[in-house]
Length: 275
Image (cartoon, rainbow, N blue to C red; front, side, top):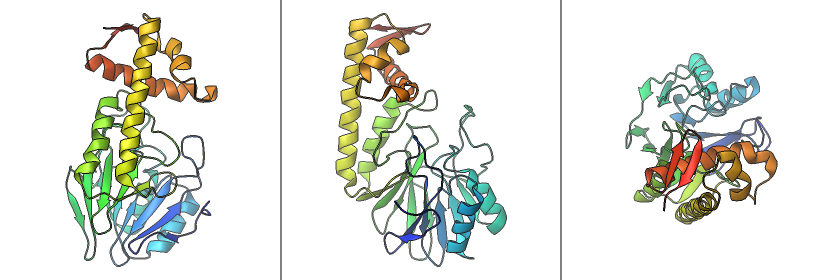
């Protein structure tokens, strides 16, 4: 595991610092990426932990131009406001409705749009809107190296939790496939190590989600009418029960997708299969 505060050169253009916030949902910690050397962008500065902010500032010196956030969850963006105050760098990202899970300190100077480009002298980042985990999620493709900074769209070693209403399973699957419209080669996830084959990883994740959806529908068809709590231990019988509270969130997202597809119906929290 990369030591906290250590700067690791991953590619000619990319360095990484890992925030000291390990946990069940963050793995070894949030990855903060530094792109470029003369004009630097920080991607996902992470939590506003003083030693982590100090490590970022020591690594970028006076070259920081952009502070870019993939989304505004508390393990990804709170460091942005602190860095901006210290350096004057521009904040780049997108906002969403407050669902009690957002970092409310983040106020972008540049509310990024899909396919917008951040351009430095020797590198460029293309913003790719990837709703699913949450509706204001963007991935950023480093055009010169084919590396996509994936935030919580793709993580190494675990699946992404989809939390309605901001999270949307149908949008998530579509957003995974959207990445394939670009020259994507490697994935720099928000948590965990680099993933070498982006196209293979996307295919694996889409297949996994659709298999889970099939399992959700089979369980719903067998138990209908039923609640989310009834379905969790059946659908996630391959998951540690201590994680059922998180599994229930993604399960609800699967059910909402099935409802949009005309295969399920929610009546006041009681779910029915439609065949």
